[in-house]
Length: 448
Ligand code: GLN
Image (cartoon, rainbow, N blue to C red; front, side, top):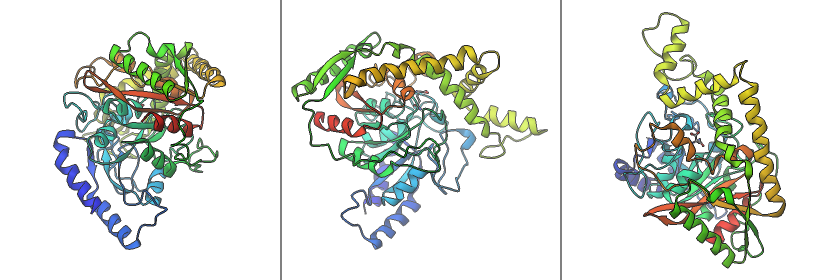
């Protein structure tokens, strides 16, 4: 019944929200029926819960497009590891969610298929790239979704829609079956309406996977264990760079209020500094685009998806399929990445970016010697208007200035609701030590 009513609600609300690329009705109902027969045990708290999946996570026999024309007819023959885990938990995937093409963007507007709307104001973007994952949860279509975050793509849309979004530590969740954008930055994580649901879902999808060479063998704690503990005695750093230029006054005010709340709850909040974070966006667009240019080579018109017609030779297949199959933003990144990896420029761009990445990471290490957590805004602004930034890539890129350093350092980061500015939700970002998501959830639950 829950699966059927969820699907009915998705269909009813979809004309307004436009969050789904595919609704996998038949498969979901079959799975739900089988679960009814099998029965639900008390230990399995997630059993029967409907979940939406970002469309860059491969799902066996369910269309998986990464919101690109080049994969518009791609039905994978295997499941991503996170899907295996979702099925092991007896959660019911009900469909695939809209996103920026190949997760490149911050508004979900680069999707080949549709423009998802912000759940609070349909003239605003839902954020991105996991915009469908965030809007669907915030609009009440589904209680939980999976997204991916390479430079902010879970946290920023979670912030824009007033929900909880977690990007776990790099290596915590298997990337096997996540269509690669930038392999050294990509990480899958849950989006939910509250902290507990988020922690429960992370419990289910975490853990070592031999199919992902960068997956970590570190043990997975119960992320719900500290939810009642409060923040008494925790030391929280608030980087001065995170409330600087470009951060909207209403966002700044909400974050300062959140800091005061943490103090009232018994934590200490002090100003800290991440001096190299200002280079984050520049470093990210070199590293992420370079990795993307390599990862996206496999879309050649032969192995997967779309193939151009009226071709004369093999070269023509590649050139025409890729020219017609990729959108503008994806092409921009492939060209930028190919350039910065090319022989004459490698040292000046890619290598240099790697060096500055280390400095950014060291800034965090230094702060975490003395502090348990770092807080700040997830985004310098609240949700902006549909169409407002899509033709201005650099302005769009700057909207990830506060989330990108976390990916570059491989750290966990989350966004939780922290009030409103101009009637739109503000997201409080909480950044933790490597593999210390439990303390982040602890603080998030106390704040909630
Ligand atoms: N908005 C950033 C980009 O366009 C981040 C995207 C992401 O995290 N997938 O690359």
